[in-house]
Image (cartoon, rainbow, N blue to C red; front, top):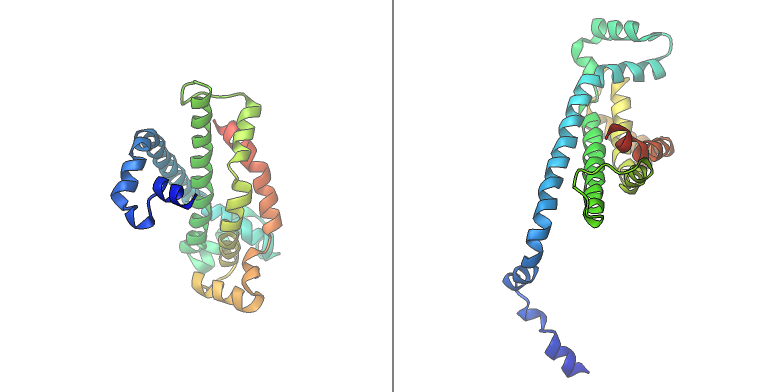
Length: 212
């Protein structure tokens, strides 16, 4: 048995990179179209994330301050006006880096995986790549992206840092991160994880079919 195995399977020293490439080459024409489309989907998700974040961040800052600031921030107009007077226009873009990191991770992964699954399902059903399936199928595809399990773990620290930066007057991203870890330990960066996870459990299946 040992000799037969050695005859059928060459030793590791004979497995070189050119041979591996040659063995995998028949798969390249099959995979290239999918890879090319995946890059476009990822780029679209990231571009949309940047646009939405930069346009909506001032309102996100106001929301965080209204929710956590108490009486000094009674409403949207008062909050934006007070922030502009006391801290300047740049204060409305506090937490930009973690906000962009969170949005780009969530949307790029979600859009790329969901659209890839849709194309693979269309190919399996001998349908056109841009086929729109029934609502239950689209919901299942959205839920199958795994965003509610994977990206919630990734973006939770960014969400925690974003909100804390938005409600403070003077603090840097690195300084806030170190302060949270020093006071609360690494798990402090995952405060509110359950709420974030439940939010994504609902949005992951429903967002793609509704926006399609």
